Amino acid sequence: MNSPTDAIDAPQPLGYWSGVADRAGVADCLAWSESMCAQLPLDEAGAFAMRLAIEEVCVNIGDHGYKGQAPGPMSVTVSQHADPPAPRIEVHIFDRAAPFHPEDAPEPDLEADVHGRRVGGLGWFLIRQLMDSMAYQSEGGENCLTLVKWLPPSAKAPDHNPQRSVGPWSPVVGA
Image 1 (spheres, rainbow, N blue to C red):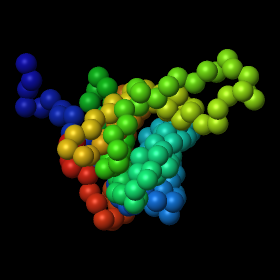
Image 2: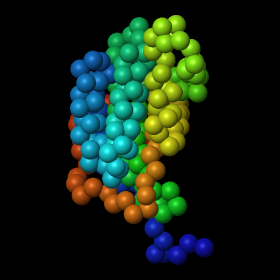
Image 3: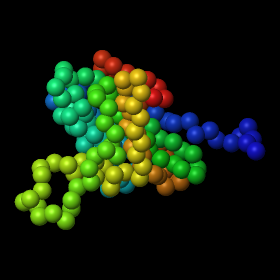
């Protein structure tokens, strides 16, 4: 039974970015994510993994998600959940591009001769290797990819106000 003093796993917002998924917007998002990830309560390898996963997803949205149409909105939220059984950093990446379920990405043939492999195709494999968990949801024309990196139970949130870059679109909270 829960008591009034039990902690609630309310996320602590750490950062937010919003913009357009064109080359300039993706570059701005990547610069923001590099700064944001350096402040997370992750070791150097964990922060690098998070930044690289965000980069892969955002570049894919810009290069493939809106392919054949005008670049559209994209946003990224970062939060820390301190729930003792599962402390974690969650990154939610939102867009309104064509839905793409990551599980539909073909597994790369890592045994094939490097000269015989097609160019590309390693991004989703890499993201799966870097993250502890990943979930995708598409509803009502909005897509949300959630990336999760587990934290040690003693991890503390950074002491700062959430970073925010205001753009033309905001995600639906809880999407």
